[in-house]
Image (cartoon, rainbow, N blue to C red; front, side, top):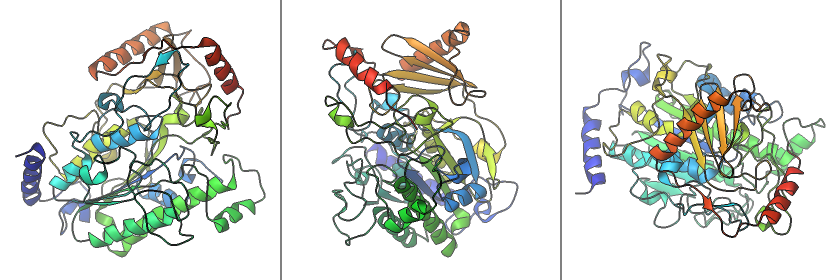
Length: 500
């Protein structure tokens, strides 16, 4: 009998024996138990949505009433992070509860190749290994129906959602972005549709069908939107509304992106409305976040950078520095919302740093699911924060990105990050240079404190190096084809580009 078979049998037994889930002082349908005994879980993941791209995080241009309402019904995290500055590693961290460095899945799939760089990235893993017990597999073993709708981007066949614990998959494949947001989408996993059909709405339709079909049993829905990733395309009537405003789009680069955000928000509203219509909203936990920061730098690349020629800025993450691909806050800090009826105090906020590896143990605790005893995770359950009964026993958060990327400031270079309390250290692997920021007083990372605080730099650097060793992180190596002249040409050009 395989390990997963054993896990499923144990989960069925636990499901039968469980009487309720995480009772709290204030009685509620969720706390007291219900016909299914366990909460449903809806996880909504948006692609390339920046920290300031929704109203409840301070945006005054984009219309996001449904996300704002969700925050008003749940807890909004001010310091919620993605485990990476780009998509695939963060998605893998959600599925596994492990840091991308431990998984050796450390870049977007398939990544970029720059032959002239000083360092050569390691031979990293370009799929989520089947040996990993995903959150879908753990919940399925506990009696949950599991559904995946939208973007997967964690490998093609044989690493698709159907092989990773999902009973139902619509739209999930190796593709990282649609060819078009209007049918035909040029997504291999979506072959049917009607002319003019809009992808964000179609994915929402499929998500609602899954909810309807599984209304009488506990379910886990992973609604992973392709939006608001480029190509920048939106419904004409929604775009027209923003063009008609006739005022400077502070925090927005164009009306099309604003319209994409609004359509994303409408999807969230439809999902919540369906839960309410079916009378199951009071026993459904809803998570909302983005996989990395908003794309904030316009790059149309010199001829030698063919990968970058279609990469255009989408939004602004101000007051955060930079955006997608960057080690700065604009690249990794995300909108992070959890609605847990009867448990989370409506309209509450939390400033404790949390990251996407924390979802796995949190969801298992919420569901009363045992999980695989042989599957260790890097994340910690944030249930004490959600209940406001305590803090987290964790010294720091970590990131490892042994790659080059064209979307960040001056070209992103291989680096590691540690955040401990108010301080954040970035170490760039090319020359070992470190930058230090006090995020409590300088969220925009404008003032590098490394020269004034060498002892703090060394203590955090030591923590980072110990962590890298503990997860057996793959490090970049010297590149025998390094061309300093070409590298400086590209970096000089990068530095000349505007950032929103």
